[in-house]
Length: 267
Image (cartoon, rainbow, N blue to C red; front, side):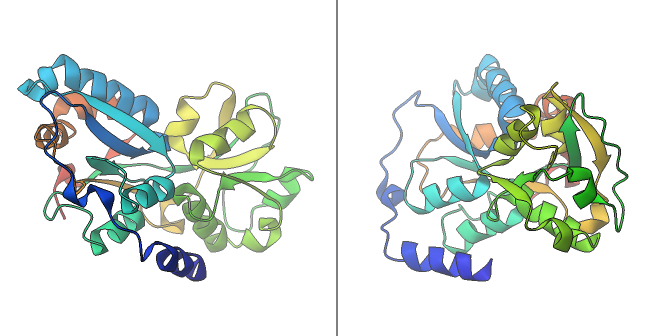
């Protein structure tokens, strides 16, 4: 992992951040949100609520672009015109902060999540998520769908499998996805007998069922930080970030299975 990130940094070291000199956004221009793929259903609804409330009374609208946190973080590094970044882990937010690409003081922890093992809805697999579980046997010659090595869900999955002592038995039997929704789709279509995704993903997909929940102690806390992109020149962005922490927005996130983190306070 360290070698992969170092290579990426060398590759991007000479890039000019095109958004640094971005002009003031035109009045009424939508707020562009780059968000982790696992947020799609919930955040789409939050954005509709934001618009219905008159952009939290400032008349703004929000449009979201979803992908793996690693992909959208790299796009921001390369100068993509984003106003807000919401990551599925703290590492990619830290990466942008170290590069000066996040507005100081704007960052806060928005949501939490849980990691679950899933199977196709009609699967007969029964397995207790616990140290030494027979995960490789349960795969029955198939592959375990997980996020790729740069995808937060994939990193949480590897850490948890390492902690439970089963990583060596499955590491050569993986079906890595480009983001957690791709992982979910592998299992929903029956292309993988088991997969590891966030609980919120499993809740929105009727073609899968939860086999078990990974112990929170087996991986780093799953936290979704949000922040203003330093190059943003959209004056409505502040109202949007405030709206994400309102009772209205939190109720929507909660309905999709997300938890809160520290009352939305800045670290």
